[in-house]
Image (tube, rainbow, N blue to C red; front, side, top):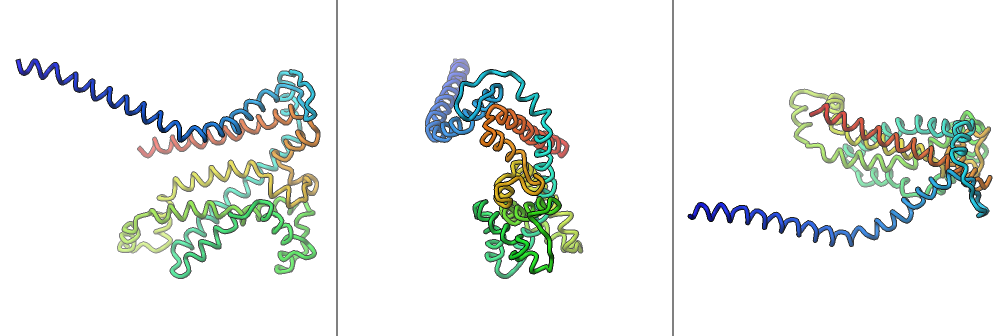
Amino acid sequence: MTTSAQTVVAPARAKTAADTATVRRKQGFQHGGWFVAPFLTLFALFVIWPLLRGVYLSFTDANISGDTANFVGLDNYREALGDPLMWDTLGHSAYFTLLVVPCITVLAFFLAMLAHNIERGKWLWRLCFFAPFLLPSTVAANLWQWLFNPGTGMINHVFGLDTPWLADKSYAMLAVVICTLWWTVGFSFLLYLAALQGIPDHLYEAAKLDGANPWHRTVHITLPMLRNITGLVIALQILASLQVFDQAVVMMDFTPGPEESTRTIVQYTLEEGFTSYRVGYASAISIIFFVIIASVAVARMWLLRKREEGVR
């Protein structure tokens, strides 16, 4: 009789516990929903709605004057895919990305190692390396525009050069890259520095006992432990570099640069939308660019997942 009663009571208790957990989850979601609601509202208003609106406009001949937009189907996409200027500007953005990403990854790692291992004045080194990242893009661009000035700039004066940095297509993009490295390396530096502080000291101590020199400790301990951070830095820098706009435009005085060598795809999109007033065509270009950016992000996630599965 007792066993039978216990058999009946046990499922009832389990059901009651499950119901209680379900109620708590629902209550937690309801209460938590109020905290995320402001963010979700702003995200929908300033991200989702403009994206959907842009997709709609890309199928029309809308212009900035506000005239009635007519549906044109895929005409804007056909024109964009056959537009040599769009491919040229996309090539400029890709070229900028190829220059910036490897340099900023290596430089950020080197600066983080320096700031992590130096004994005296750590706070000063960290401040100096990170401080430029706090500057607005226009301030950084104007500063380097002055430094690269062929007549009064410090770069040519200090190194004894006579290089027209901002007036020659051979050097214009390189000048933008140098400005970007100085301005944005602080963020990647901070990521590396935080990751270095998370590496257990006993790994280095054991390596020292085994006779490993600093180079071996860096190659066999530091770099493998920073693999995930390096992948994150590379992915973030690729996505940010492909969208380069501010510093290139400001340094070139709001022009496409010498022989249009620094005109990026973001700048070309804005010119089509707000200079040529072709909002529909500019929307189509932006959607194509969005697909490229999304493809890069998805590819990075897929590679990361494959690597994690390989490790397992």
